[in-house]
Image (cartoon, rainbow, N blue to C red; front, side, top):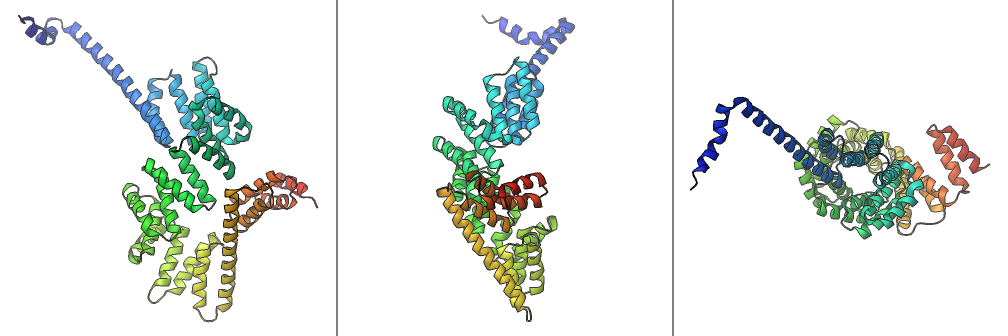
Length: 433
């Protein structure tokens, strides 16, 4: 009944003997089809991985996956468009523009998709105020892009150190998408900058619940716990980081700080010396090496003083280094005046830090419409050596009151010091006599 079955089964083995040339051609054709199909299937897999990596906020990995797709599908608008989004997220703006131009060429003109991406690109490059209204209109009328628009507007303001507008967009994003890991990450970063540590810890913990692989978030959270002298809460995160990223200096620094706070001084010393061998000017490593020298039995005061002075050379307003230097000086006969001067400087720095924290808490809860608080924050940040934050708050004061003369005067001084003479002259004119 099934006599034909053996013949069919052995037909491929008989054919090469009867028709060798035709058989070879058929086999080559089959192989070529399989290669083509396999290549396209793999490209589709790589495309999906690129989308996933971009969504996980790892644009470098996303581009590594997509590069194969660009080779296989050079005619694909969808592939070039994803390449443009990835380039924008990595900050490779000329490449993003080039990919968008290729999309327009392939589809013979702009589309709604490329026009929106162009606006997002402009927002991220710093033209956020010029395109904000258009993007918000798009977000309100097309919910499919709302999340990305709100994130990009927040990112544009963050790049210009405009924290309060960025927080507004992130709050709106999280109200609609409470599990948006990227928004939680950035919101926590801004809260940390505004010294709202409890809010930052809450954001970071939620982000890690949703996406445990976020290394930068985990590092920031561990260091935040350590800044509050809490190695117990930092320890689980440091253990994970030690397994996944032992080569990161921030991880080594966190481990060293935790070991010091736990009283494991020998382990801390090994880690700190390793960090200083790689980065001799690491403020954290220098600070804790100084603390270790002070804790030695007997204390090695001269060595500790050297470490603290190296920290203060880079940051004259480090309260911990000033405190350590004071401890060194007050224990050396004949250096009482030096110790008193350092103590006075430390108290001034602490008072300014407390005042900054108070003002920031007020700005975070209810931003003032007047320039005074923003000007004071700018002035104190400049005195503390935080140049970027000083400029941010002074520009904020300038927006709140274009006629606030102290703001213009201080901006002129800062700009002139940084070599921006034309801008300084303009601010000087606005400051008046």
